[in-house]
Image (cartoon, rainbow, N blue to C red; front, side):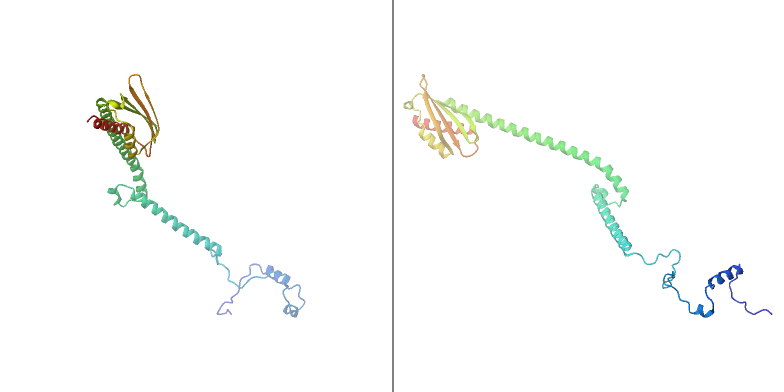
Length: 256
C-alpha cells in the first residue's frame, strides 16, 4: 500500500559509501553513552555561524579607509570640474564682444580662441606701429622746437654782441659749475662798466662767483675769466644771454 505523501528524504546515490562514512565517524565510540558525552577539543576547527553566509557579489561592510578614499576622490573631482569650468568661462570672456553672447561648447570655445589669437596679435602689431609713428612725430617736433629755440638764443646773443663793446663766452664744467669769459674793449674810463655791480646782480639770480682772474692784452682789450657755482642745473646759453643783457644795460646807463 502506497503512502499518501512521499517520505521526504535525500536520495543516496551511493548508500554503501555513506554507510562507510558513518561507520568511520562512529568507530571511536564503544557505546551510545560515549557518543552522548562526547565533547569537542579546543584545537578542532569550528565553523563560524554567528553571521549569515555572504551571497555571491556581496562585499559586506566596506573598510572605512576605502570609504574615505572614495569621498576624497569625489570631492577632488568636483573641485577639478569647477576649476575647469572657471577656466573655460574666462577663455570665453576673452572672445570678441560679438561672440561672447553665443553659447559655445567647450571644444568650440577652444577652437574659436585658437583662431582669434593670431587676429589679436595682428591688431597688437598694428597698434605698436602706430605708437612708434606717433612717438617719432613727437620727437621730431621736439627736436625742431629745440633747434628753433637754440637758433633764437644764438641770434639774440649775436645781436647783443654786435651792439656792445664786449663779448661774453662760457664753458660748462658740470651740472652746477660754469666758467665765463668776458672780453672788453678799452678801460672803464671810456664807459665800460665795472664788474662789481654785475656780479652782485648775478648772485641775486643764483650765480655765485668762486674764482676770478683778469689780464689786459696789448691792444687795450681786457679779459675776465670767472668761475661760477649755481644752485641747480642751468642752461649755459641762457646764462650767457642774461650776463650780456646786464652788461649792455649797465653800458647804456653809463653812456647816457
